[in-house]
Length: 490
Ligand code: ADP
Image 1 (cartoon, protein in one colour):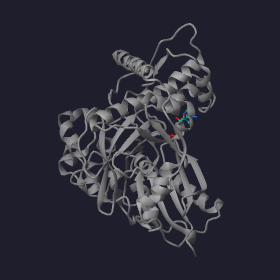
Image 2 (tube, rainbow, N blue to C red):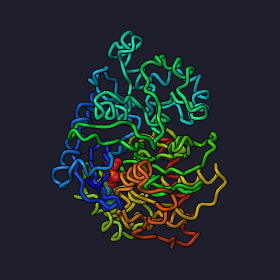
Image 3 (cartoon, rainbow, N blue to C red):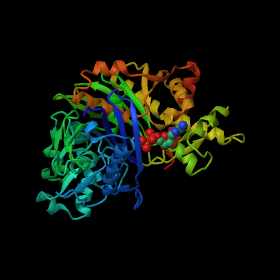
Image 4 (cartoon, helix red, strand yellow):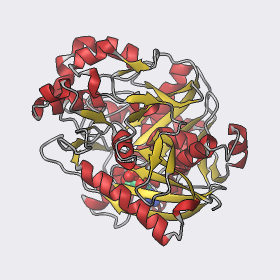
């Protein structure tokens, strides 16, 4: 039977989705299932690995059944996954403890203990010593669930979400980590492209619990979970890397910003990694045909989540999309909201900064609050862009965007104004899944070159800067002052 579809699993923090693409890259069906987060104590964020797995299987089944797809018509599956989230499981694939979610800070003390190695760690991994990444989460779980002996005996397997899903989809035949995901563990040497013995010993993690690392563009194995016809798994990327690929940022210097719960700005930096300062991370974008492409990354911890806060906590809007209308109504130019509810990411990496509001007057109303909160997302992203410009010495005149909050035209226009650069919103909203679709299509030779993919990429809207320079500089100066004041309040 003719192959007609590629199904991409998009396993995110809040939901798991399966997206069926036809071989031209058009979306034919989307199945989605929300998954739960548990907050057992302050700073801890956990998930049930079994729920991650069952939701994945359910959405693939729904895609096949309701999308009227015959399994024989599926050319491949691919995976885009939430990064850094850490799962320990036994050889049967049974989780040995809860999955620790990337946002969780419960392993902070494990990072504090090894502060002296901060520089060594950064030099080898391109990351900063921070509980977001997997290594301290593994160390915490081994201690907390008494798994050291078992791990030394080879009876504990570590996986990020892609590894765990792959192990199950292939009926325990494939135990691999995708190289970009591996680069987010704090255990992978991004220069030597292998697990690093020194880092393993710093974190006291036995090497036998780590999977073999494979290029992103690979046949990772086959699944027969959906019928006896084996389906290849032909591409895996972490979510932000997937969106960089889906936005066709294949060339050095091209960059994208994703406006989801947080914002993640990634720039393709080509084949040669280097260390950046000012809180920027160096990471592996993807491995293809034995060649690694690197990216630099800056993170805004609270992006669209600030709009959720307006909706769920302040209750001044009912839907996130209402924020656009409110912002357009307000003429307030004085209010600054710093939504640092969980600290600040790039370039500050200040874990203890709390949120603040500056410039409230008698006339300040809810629309002004909404407008200033949206603008904060744009200022935070500009903070990241400014350090990228400084660290790379590059002029940046254009940026590609995606993610839930990029549907807000007020935010996108303000982003273009305040960054003084073109903001290009892609036509396909699902750029994460699209990235993995492209990757699988390359593995399967459905597409034969990156140029072919780039040519077909379309934009829905391009925003160009309209604000005059004086106003832009004044506003950004005020924002920097607001950040400074917020950081003093401790
Ligand atoms: P994630 O992948 O991190 O779950 P999404 O890309 O689905 O995030 O984006 C969801 C986020 O985008 C939410 O925080 C939501 O508040 C925000 N959002 C969605 N639509 C809008 C909008 N029209 N204006 C502003 N924010 C929005």
